[in-house]
Image (cartoon, helix red, strand yellow):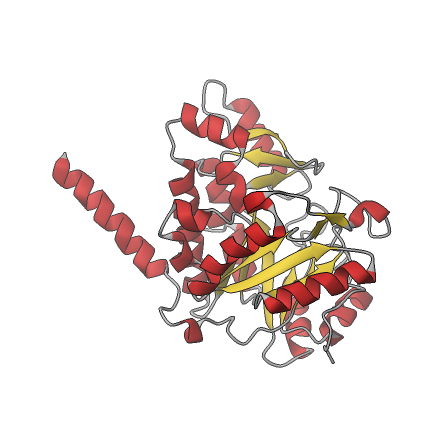
Length: 333
């Protein structure tokens, strides 16, 4: 048994090494990125795509769209080609939510039916989003029923990379620390921290198999760099929301609740505390992006000034993420 355990440990370490990012920060594909745009909604129209293509941003994080029910035939390859043609050298990265299921996705009918049919088996859909986003549900992200959606032979990750994306932007990495998920993991005797890093390593390997310089950017989960030493080697960058200002879940673009909610946290949750944690990612050679949500120009100006002092790559937009920001970074052409 002891030798078997050692083999499993060595196999895990080897798989992690295969998935690790370049050892030199200068080799990080995100090293030249100075600005980015994050848009997930209303990308089905030519006008919206043209506006994004004409924008000056070095990196675009976008919804691939064809994974949404009703948009299965959306031409993501044409989207990527158009966005790249708008600025030579630009990176275009696909947003994917790896820690929550969304009931508007093409996978939802099969996933929900599987969950209903699996009487006596471990749960995969665990409950509503804890932050109030409708249509989003926590999942047991280590479950084969969930991981096969992304990593299967004809999984969504292969489809995304086949469309020409330069990599993926992983939402809900912090699921490993979410209360309902931790409770279910304990019930199933799963270490959720290690399971999330294993999942990211598998995603990383598949991205690199499709695109040798493909990028993996994680969102939020600032403590994962402390909780599992493998993590920093498996990503090229990380984006953090709400450092200075947040918005209410599901707020529309013009809703005043779509931004300007100041971070009043104390200690490690305060802006200063968060910046201290972000420095660990910077010291690891990772690109660190921030996304804050504001409608008021004076709040946006504060974010950009403080982010610049901290050496971050910031964006101030609105929580619905449905248009180009009206508060772009200063100095863009």
